Image (tube, rainbow, N blue to C red):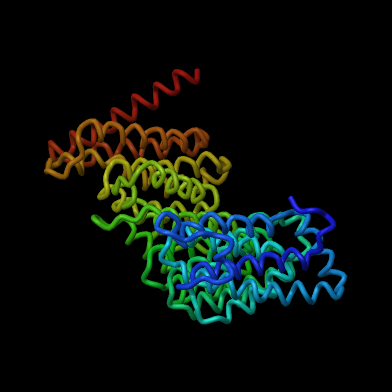
Length: 478
């Protein structure tokens, strides 16, 4: 802990002199440091530095020094000029020291901690001013170090208390330019992480700025990069932007959504599964469903459903299953029911092809949507829903007439039929007697329409199974 009477300028100048000693230790023939340390086979320059570099980090991290420096810089005293000048020289020293010790992991970490401590010394506004200068340097390693420090500062900044949000938001275009122009992937990733953190904390304060940045993130230099991590980070950024911009994000959707469904399909390919990309794509899609659900219609909606069938069949793990099911639940809740019912009907064959799990999730979407709609709406669309259920009731016949190596097992057909019957009962409970009677007759006629013995028998088994569910449920209701 520093004495409060020690001036901020004195402290940073002390650190500067300390680093002069560190550089001298690394010389082939040390001069000024030779009277302070002994270098021999047991005490190498690197081991000595590893012990020494913790002290300047401690000095610069002292809360009293940080507080006093902020006060001095705010008042623009003569001491402020000394601090700024020394600060610039310290940065140069740390960067040079990082280059000299970059092959030593422990010393590299120490230099990074020292840089972080130095960058924390200034207020966020002053810090961003320094960042703008540092990011013009050609050394991408140094650029990445300072961006890591900025990201840490953002993590420590509470959005409701920050007085520097204007300076932080004004820094977004420079970060976006870095993402767009840099070919260094680690640097690009760090810049994108900073953008995402700024959006989470302050994005709602300047939606015009966020709209501008969204075009870059959804473009070829970010979402279009042939790198999984870049795509994942871009998708998460875009998901945050959807939440912030809502309707204002609509112009970006035609550019982004086809790529997202393409990435989702690629993430479940055999021998090339990518769980992080899979989950990021579903996170983005979920936010579209939450804030602009009317933008997912027609072919786009069909594509989301068919890829979800493939995802269900891919067996990528519990977290992937949960992300997919959460998105499907949002489909059931947010998509206009007539649009959703049509899409579920059009993609039923896709669900069957991908297997029982896909079919059950498909039916879950329909059942959830039915539960959430009023009786008047279900009654109005009961005829089209019945057409769907007649397709679903035919699953047993399709699987078993004839049986093939790809046919569902008996137990799987039983489980699917249970889900079909439960979903059909959800519809029936919302119909009055006048609406239900003709539908019941239509179902009964369907069950006896096939004259082929084996195929007709499969339909009858399905119909009897449904009747068991139907009358059993009515009995419980009574």
